[in-house]
Length: 116
Length: 112
Image 1 (tube, rainbow over the protein chains, first blue to last red):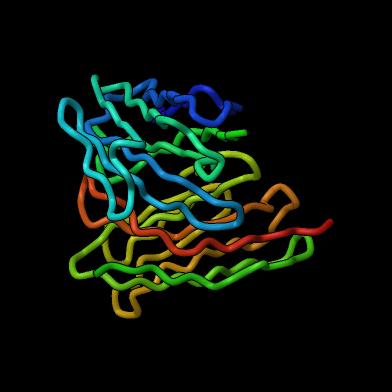
Image 2: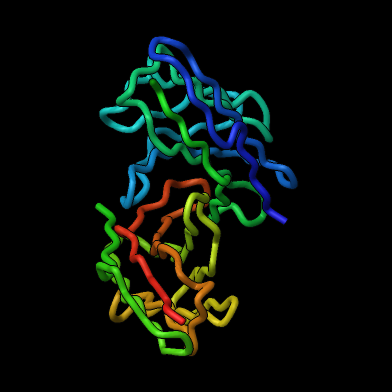
């Protein structure tokens, strides 16, 4: 149980375009989802926390107009990187928490974004 | 604020060696503690967790005991395999739905 999927697993886009990444909890209802960014050989950096049906809470320094997060249902959250630039290239990982095991975050496999 | 400190890597071992990765934490309350493992190019997988003092989490031969008196949650495995090569993250969470505070990660390389 507690499986989280992400789609796509990798994406290459041109500078100036927008990219949407989906995060789904497949076998549980996720009341809270988290989005992280990870640079090579570094730890995860939390970008934002989202609760189903409400606005996401962004960490300091994360541009909310650039990284749009939607948590429309208890099983789906999306991250849209708007007007992507090469510096947005990174590994983006989501996690989900909920249910009886609510203190545990289960992570998706990650999405590698490359902006040309 | 909360913080997690874990030993820096890389840690290089031979197969069947004993592995210890130290993790200490600072928290204002009574956090839950976690070890996650990340294989190359993948997301994080929950390895084990402990939710209160003296709890022992275990999975796949790995163990860690929640030591409140020393604010530690050291990860151990008695006999590592090449397939255990990965990055290991220690983390804490103060409440359900709360964000995780991660350590910096420890890269482990097991050689045949």
